[in-house]
Length: 251
Figure 1: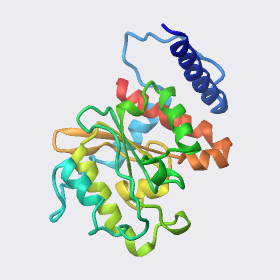
Figure 2: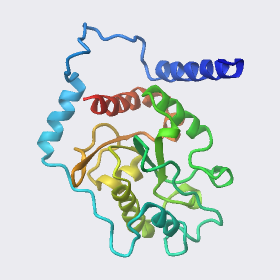
Figure 3: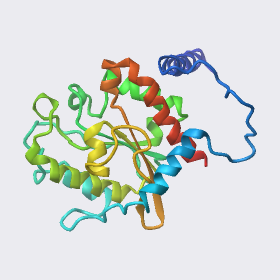
Figure 4: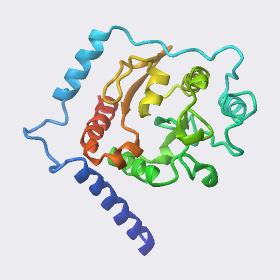
């Protein structure tokens, strides 16, 4: 391993440890011994499973809507074209990143951040660096994630116009239906409501899995990184949300 690779590894490890500390993780072991060879549910997952059972069968994810392309590449081209609500918001729009065929996780945010258009990628600034730390803490990274946004252009003042919400939500759900992710992480209220509806929780195990025929998407909502930067005290709750994502993946 070269010196640069060694420094990169140290920096990544330090970043993950910083995230854990800020999230309130002060030990790497459970209070009680655990047999890792036997599958078991932790209390948080047991509660989540009970809530999911009470909620009834998994809601079906919408099939690709009439009028929208039903392949990923064609849909992205349509999404960045002129026939969508956010087409006139900015001269440069930011599309999804990642490969749907190999991504182990889909992450949906609400709007591009201030510098994303210039960078050509979503979550390119401080919010993205925090997301990278969150992903690293659950053992993944952007190279394994499909990252998309409810809006492809940043609206004025970062607020989505009410008149555009319905179609933008429909477009986002259509993309989820095309990608068919096994795990879906929703960042913030707008992304949560777009996929789960008005009753979707703002964070935590907010829904049973979305169903795509024979494939179930475990859907977890959490705080948007910009909120976590403004309110560091929420990081402990965000870490619990991410743990739900890990536990469901390992189950």
